Length: 327
Image (spheres, rainbow, N blue to C red):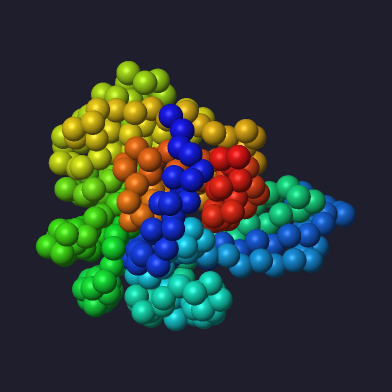
């Protein structure tokens, strides 16, 4: 259940400059870091003296970053607000080389921002600014029009759902239909709200908790129960394959004609699991565009996930770090 470094290099070389379209919920991850030297006189809480502010792309934008870091090209379709953080998002797109042509500006919802306050290297609090209600009709129309405009020349599409309103039933159905007509493979990273709406896709990648909740199962993280859930999803969604991420138990890949493959985790020490799912779906998709089999792509995604959870914060996998992990 391994893959040689030369094979990975061959796959990623063939994936270079492939074009992947990511559709989903864009976020900004803001980190405010500093030191704590006293307790507030106003309430029993620490006062953090901020000495560093960091802005990173999160959500579907972090998926696009992972695609780029592995050598492929990425275009992102999603919603930002007409606000300061929307401008920050555009600046980060420009800095990282993400095509901004799919950005839809909304006057009625802010750019989604997750602010984490770090004091003395301890995560003290997270503050979210967002509107998670489904996108309005005018916004949904703009998203679908952007998808139609950008699909030509695309090698694969990732649907990245964070339940923040972009992936409405109309967007899901429209994008999958357009991709099927053009024979463009579709990979899905779902969330609970529209879990069973992603039908007839190439790869459906839920995590173990999402799967248990969606199927109303007490799904203990052991192989027999996971196999039952995976086979059920294959049938119900009429998917080509299902990849269930299982945290410390690794991944389980289900294919219509190839049975199941359980892939144990490669993690040595967990520092931060944030963004691991983004890395899995991005690495899997890049590998498939480079000619990997589903099994090879899943193994590569497993290695990539191990790389990012061993680091603090939401960071994309890099080609160099992925190859180092194989050594």
